[in-house]
Length: 100
Figure 1 (cartoon, rainbow, N blue to C red):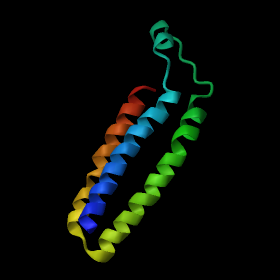
Figure 2 (figure 1 turned 180 degrees about the horizontal axis):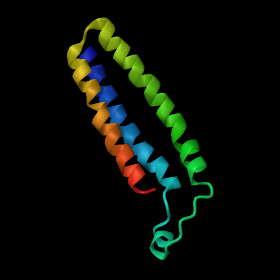
Figure 3 (figure 1 turned 120 degrees about the horizontal axis):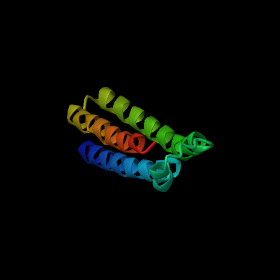
Figure 4 (figure 1 turned 90 degrees about the horizontal axis):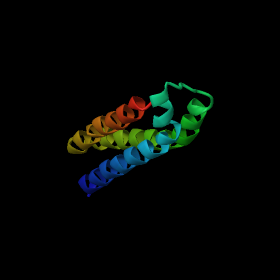
């Protein structure tokens, strides 16, 4: 049963990473402005933070709770799935930062 929850939580993290990229895209530079050479940064950081911060806070709390459960119950196979969340989120952050 615990293994099933780990798979569900990993899937939730993947979905969360996709939502993160979609929400973060509100703060990306406009390609037409970039082509012309405009580099405006008026409100993009604030838009990015307001769009992404609540999502990051929720998944940080979720993943910390998951890790405490893994350590307390010694569910090491779940720990392997928990570690797979790291590359998932790194890919999402890399996609986001490539567009700033």
